[in-house]
Image (cartoon, rainbow, N blue to C red; front, side):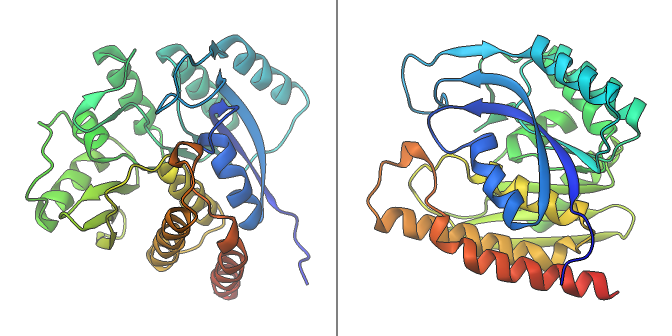
Length: 289
C-alpha cells in the first residue's frame, strides 16, 4: 500500500496542440512513474514545428513569469524543476532566479540543436545562456550536437568511440552538472545509444538500442521525462536506463506496425502497463535501501 505522498515537480517546456511531443508526450509518463507535475508553459504552438506547415507560435514568457510569481506567493512546494524547450535567454534567466530562490534540484534538457546545427532563432548568446543554466543543473541530457555546442567542441557524428564520449561527458561535467546523459548517439547505421556519466561516482556507461531509419517525434521528450522521474525519486539511473530504452524501442516498433502518420508522435500507450510494473519494481527496490 502506498502511504507517502507523491513528489511534485515543475515541467518547463512548450505545449503543442497537435503532435505528441514535449509536455503532451511527457505527462502520461510522469503519471505512470508516480509523479505530480505542474506545467510551466514556455511556448504555445498549434502543432510541433517538425513536420507541419503554418504553425501558430505564441511566446509565453510573460505568462511563464506570472505562473512562477503566483506559485511562490502561495508557497507551493516542489521537488525539482525539469526544463525542456526554452524560447529565449530571458526565460532561462527567470528560471535561474526561481531555482536559486527556491533551492530546487534542476534537470536540464538543453533543447537547442540537432544534426550539427542550432535550431532556428538560437545563436551564440543563447548557447552561453544555456551553458549557464547547465552549470546550475544536477543532471543534463544533451544530444550529441547540443553537447558539442555546450562543450565548445567541433561537432562530429562518426567514429563515436567510448573514449570520445567519456571525454565529452567529462568536459560537460566541468560546467558543474553532477550527472550527464548524452542522448541520441548515432553509434552505427543500425545502433543508437545513450551514454551516462556520474561525476561523483566516476562511472561511465554506454547503452545501445536499435536505430530506426524513420524520423520519430517526441522520443527525446519521452526519455527526458522517464529519466527525470527516476532521478527525482532516487532510482539508480544505471538500472533504469535499459528499461526505458526497451520501452521506447517497443513503442517505436508498435508505431510502425500501426502504419500511422509519424508526425503525430509515438504510439506508446499499449506499453504503459508494462512500464508501470517495471518502474514500480525499480522504485520498490530503491526504497528498500
